[in-house]
Structure formats: C-alpha cells, structure tokens
Image 1 (cartoon, helix red, strand yellow):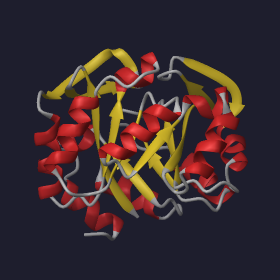
Image 2: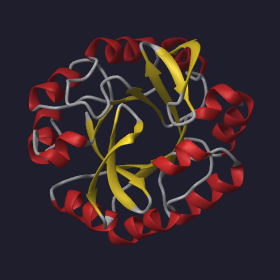
Image 3: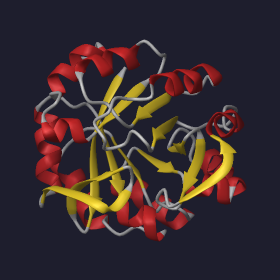
Length: 239
C-alpha cells in the first residue's frame, strides 16, 4: 500500500482543515516547498497536493506554490482542487504533476470527465468525497443524494489512474479512518482506490492495508506527530 503525505495549500501556505471546514484551519508552515522536501527526505515516494482555495472557488489559486514544490523535489505528485476545465488540466500536467484529481465535475459534468480520462489516460484520478456515504462537491460545501459506491462503479471501465476516496467526517479529526467504507469501495471496483481521512496511528495504517486499498493519504497526523512517516511506510509494507 502506497503512502501519500498530504500538503494542503491555502493562501500559499501549508494548512489543514477540520472536516473540510474553512473556518477551522491550522497553518503548519509558510513554505510548502520546504514541507515537501522534508517528507521526501523522510522517505516519501509520492505526494498528494490539494489546492483548497481552488476546491472552494472552482479555479486554481495556488499554482505558484505547486510549481515551487515540483521544483524542490523529484517524486511523483498528484493535485486536487480547482481542476474543472481542460486548459487547467493541460497547464498542470505541463507543470510536472503526474496526475490530477477531479472531484466536483464527476457529478456536475461526467461527460467532460470521461473525455479527459480518454484524452489523458492514467493521468486523471476520480475524487470521491463522501459525507455519511453520499458524495459531496464544491469544496465539500454541498452534499448530493448520490452514494459514493455507485459513483465509483460508474468509472470502473474508464482509463483513470485511481479513485481517491475521502471520508469527510474523519478528515482532519484524528479519529481513525472509516475502514469499513474503504473496504466496501475497494471491493466494489477493480480500479486502485486511495483512502483518505482519519488516519491517526500506525495501527490505522495496518488496518487499511488489509482492506485492499492501493494507497493511503495521511495529513494531520504526520504534522502533529501521532504517527511518523517512517512508521507509516513500515506498516504499509513500503519502507
């Protein structure tokens, strides 16, 4: 199971939100590129970047910070947040990102997402963010009536790189991941599933590794030291 340390960007800084609430923000570092170098030095083989401003407002807002991160390190990076048109997607791939996470458009304009998946095979990641099992969009401010597992099945036949599945209720709460939901999604599709939200301890990583998910995104717990990257990598079997 791959471990993806998360770098969430807002206003050019490395931050974390609690349950996606923009009013509950913790700033961890003013220099995201330095954070990226730190995770790579600690053993990270890939990084998960999020443009929180872009996720909320619908257009990329932290391009400069993303570019600085890519200049600072030499491991694959994926980015989510604000990727809602082809021009942005092409720009970011040209910047050096390995793959891009598309979330809101999966429900809003699935035909466009399918075109992007086929035009850029294995470069698009479908982001499914769920609240109590139902898909949320627009920076998690709106919740649909569509079940996450049903959305996942709709993309199983497309040339996507992966599905990133985030449990919003667990995100940034240090309360443990929703292992049951992750296992359900991983068993429902043949596409690689990357779990996100709630990982707090080494045991959480071990539990996720038994579910069949291909990867695990870890954020707040790394920044607050409830688990180290080395411990997570060892528990995932990728140290």
